[in-house]
Image (tube, rainbow, N blue to C red; front, side, top):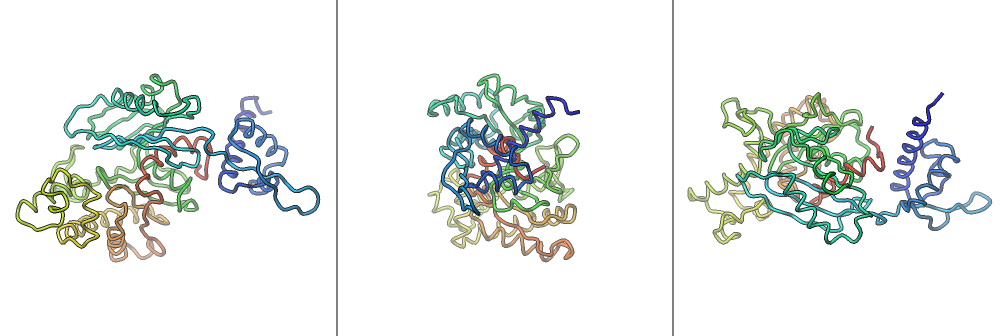
Length: 401
């Protein structure tokens, strides 16, 4: 005999699954929903009534009839409420307001100064308070979703380790919930990006997928048989801290020769400046009018596009080291495809081309048949869409087990 609590759980789960079907296929009839997920028409009708009552779903239009009355169609009401997505990396905090289709409605970017010891919880609370001032009605806020680089215990809401921001066991979820009394979700940034691809992106059908991000940091999220592989302590995917040179430079993590030290934006920036100072000519000097502090990943990508020799030379090295690391991931996990995201991959087709060339040359053919590296589905908004997807996954229970 099922307990009342079990029945309520099943009802809520069915409602989430039905809502996801409506999101993906609407406008759709109740009968079509029942056929798609093999749930009784009575269950569907009851769930849809609840969703209409909550204003998450609206009726609109009629479908084709096979005899008798035409069915009334239902569809998602994406702007009935909103959520806040927060993406934190070593150099900035991005905050955005998004709707239920993960569409960004408003976005702010706050820079973080290097080598400054931040009280991250307090800083973030102030930023969110300021952001909320432009929101119409906080009662319509479903929740706050936060992604951050480093090792995150998503169940406890703790940032276990982030060397760049000098974080060790920070209970960030509790701090934000205590400040705003709004449900808060937190996870590693690449896990959020992977959830975004599975829920809203171009790769929803893939069951074995790796998302690699390259920017301030380097990380990976791994989808195995449609489930995120988190590891024993939630630390799986620290791709940037895999060693590629045991005689290499020390890393902030305490190891030496980490991949991140060869391909992250900080490394690229230092190399750009040092080579220009050593006499190398570059379009970058003119682009920033000699002020090297204004060189950004966007300007670096622009220099690549215009064929700048220094930028292309650095890109070649980045593609080689990144490709080497991805070959190892392919041999370990045998994915269907790899998605490359982050500031350095955005609008950088040459990087993706060169990494694919490296993979085709060095990886086992048995593992690479039909396997390629693809760009993220969300471009410049990928970070905050990834953040929002933590909450939206809870709401929709999309695809992922």
